[in-house]
Image (cartoon, rainbow, N blue to C red; front, side):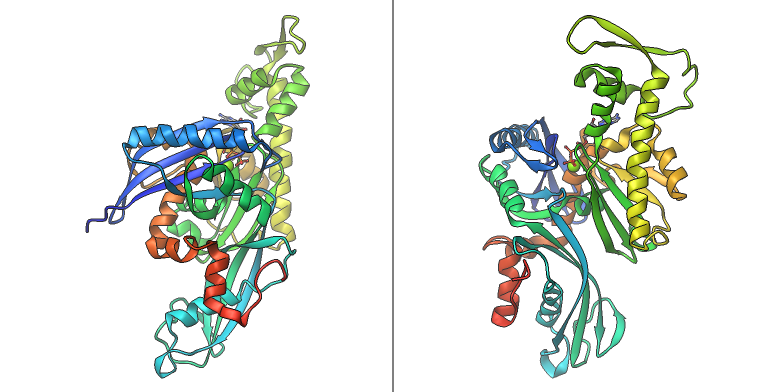
Length: 412
Ligand SMILES: Nc1ncnc2c1ncn2[C@@H]1O[C@H](COP(=O)(O)OP(=O)(O)OP(=O)(O)O)[C@@H](O)[C@H]1O
Ligand SMILES: [Mg+2]
């Protein structure tokens, strides 16, 4: 089958913007180009300097379009950070299809009804991830369309975003002359790039360790069961190290990337690292073991905090296929072993998989979101984009689906 679609994924992270351009042919996703631009325009996971982030989008988009020889004018954009809430919800509608069978419209309305939960007034729906359906109380239905019944119940995991957060991300992209096709929750996008179907079915915990925060999703039986964010990412490791070694952020970043959090390195007791002193008065020598120990304690704090979220949500038995760490922060040496020790599951690093074409430059975990955005757009198809975005986003789609029947989002 020939499919001429070219798709664009734009990850607006808190330390970089990554853009991937891919061509879709049937199920083959061929990366044609990519671009990356670092920026310092985000604070605590939200955009603090719009023009700096816009400039990064522009640079990364230009780089990707030059490599792909294809214009970057429209793309799916990742959104994350703490202004995002997720809830498990159910919705119920009467079956209105021909001969009392479930129509596609009934299914959509049942899912949309799941979004009718109380959230703060300034939040809007970001995603409705279907969990399953029940017909007249009979549960376990994945595809109810065409089945006979009178009442259709849906369960879904619904994500809400703070309106200003979504508007700001969209602005940053629009000002770089790129239109937003759909906003996608970042770890959901990452999951589509790095997880296998088996992992999603069996159950796993995905953690996207970025620069400012670490966002997690629990999958079970092929769907999302829970999500959350810990306000800790790679930036915190670097700043700990800079403070403890009394050195510059740039030097601390290098030490972090080189030595990681391994306490069992050979010769660790005697090895030393030379770093500039803060204030610029020469170099100083510090034991590598000390630096690794600083990283180790921060890594423990992050992982224990994530583990506590699972325990608090009574979710710790769900990830039977283990833990998958992605995002740039997942590259910290020693993190996977420590995660296995703390969680008691198998852990691995999640890198983008199943792609063809220019895959080398997008093979590190910090490309998971941008690559996953391509996969998700491909899976959802062009109809999804048109229904959800062209006339005002998922809110418009919901209002269109439910008419005057429901008041949506923000507890309004
Ligand atoms: N080899 C490495 N070891 C440890 N940390 C690393 C390594 N390589 C990159 N990082 C860290 O990864 C972080 C950036 O990751 P990423 O690009 O996924 O973040 P982001 O998407 O910009 O941020 P966020 O997801 O929080 O918005 C930086 O803090 C960087 O120091
Ligand atoms: Mg990120």
